Image 1 (cartoon, rainbow, N blue to C red):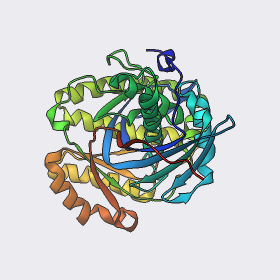
Image 2: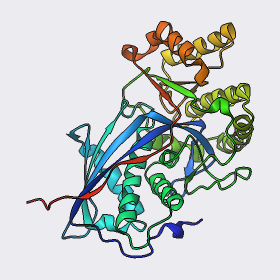
Image 3: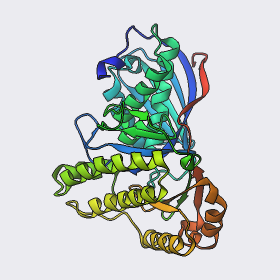
Length: 369
């Protein structure tokens, strides 16, 4: 499937004014995506777990304008946030050919996260994917040639990618692949796809508890970090390593090989941060408490035989991954030992989820006076 498959087949005319709402989850990459080229295309395949409780709720209110041109206002948790509006306008500019009606309407984006914004829990992934799903839902409602459910989901992922690469992985679940890989059927650089292989029962309802080491915004944006891969001395080796890791992870997920899963996931987390620390300029997003948690995870596994492991996103916070059978044990351990490393003792208990959903269907609104 190429980009042309997502171009509208007929004009789309929305009502004068209306609204809808969508919810989309964050995701946590197991094999990491770091480095992009072209139009938000990945330099390597990534594989992620879709989360459930860490999500963004987005209400999209639209009203027809007299003049052409992109127009948007963004409200985060009930407050107007003009700083986010340039990013949404850039997103609309990128996707204009695929959803041309966006140029004829003013959009009010009301969004709220169930987790701290900009703290390394992929708020851009959940936020952009929720917005992309809303736009595709409008096309489905008012377009003369509705897409099939599968193509509509792919188009939402395709659009989301143009706002945030990792957002392409939040539309479906519980496991998503983004980036072409010779050994993964149907994989594409253009959009994420649900895991096409068998998923061993041990990974069903897998737990993910996010330990909030630092709830503040990251000191370096993900976009800036990706850009530094263009001249990174280890970039080629990293991209090759990621393709090999994706192949190995495929085997682990299908066979229920948790030991191999742990090895891959933890190495990927440490490699991501090693890449950051060896960029030019170099930077460090881990905090002392991040390292203390990692050491505690290794000690806990040695002493108890637990199959809990850690991964990191582009931030200081730690994701603990574990089979659902260990949820009680791991939760008790977090409360007694690890919570002291968390900012204000804060952590989020989550698990694998199924992707983005429309929470309120499109409805027309009276024209504002």
